[in-house]
Length: 451
Image (cartoon, rainbow, N blue to C red; front, side, top):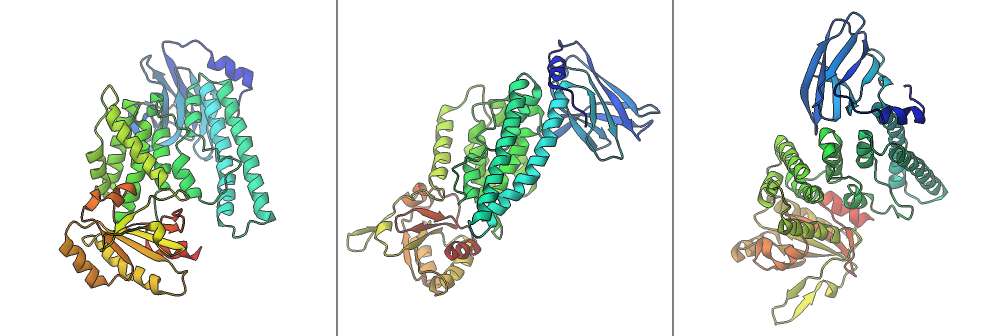
């Protein structure tokens, strides 16, 4: 790939806007064939134009003055070859169909910047992903771990300086909009690396500019949404539990987008379409029940409710202090979580009508009685509304721990305080009510106790 010197890029990027521009070049190895130009909207490709190449593979698209700036793709049939940025400038390129490499831009300041960013980003991710895996998996924080940590931060600082330089040198470019929101989260130097997953859930979207409507003509917002959902994708868990995790992710994404109606409506529809494709009906119902398409003005009451929900999720993260749960006794006395005489307490929200709960409870009883695991207490809070159903389940499963039910279902005080979306939901606490883990399966319970 060839890149112009910085002063040449500045000259190209400051050429006055013309009424009409061209995207032209040569696709080597593709003579006398149809080449298609596709326009991006989110992750969707829309047909824009098509031309025939000549005997040398040369092509030319005439871009109308009304053509929107954004990300486009050159494609053969339904298969995009590569993405480009069009921002009302002439683009000239060469691409070898057999070489499996990036295109060479002869003219286009935007794409010289953008493809340099793609090239450097690919190198950064290949290295940083390996270093992060090592930092998370290496069992001992010895000299080797510290060396790995130092190398990660050196690499991160180098990459951050590079992207900051691009943003400073080409602030008016379309590429700058992409780079600003697309580049990876910067992990602070004082990060302890004790709960990477929760850190990414809390901060992954911090630098994504959801107010930037130009990003609707790129794949940045959809790519960020998919990556963020990945932090809520669990292994060895049932569909219902997975849906409850995705509901939490949806709330964060839509809250971030709420100030910009166009972005909010787009992401809301994108999430509905995606979850519908994979049959996550409960997540779709959650979106339908809690959100509506944005109007020209932001619904401040709805935004406040969503902000409260997102804050509740963050307040229930690993390392936070869980709310106390006060339980009335039979003799007009009360006791709470702090009165439980155990170094570890597993708070379990369940219900007799929940098949995943009734399948899990016998397995949890085995762990509870197994001396191979550290001693822990269980506070099982039922979300039943029928006393008969609740008592029948207690008798059937013979639960040997502290059981409690307010008979208020989802409106029970503990369920509200703990921001419960689905059953079963579990929290492993220490004696001071610090949240040590949020297991979503029996496997996770064993893993958390093993620590």
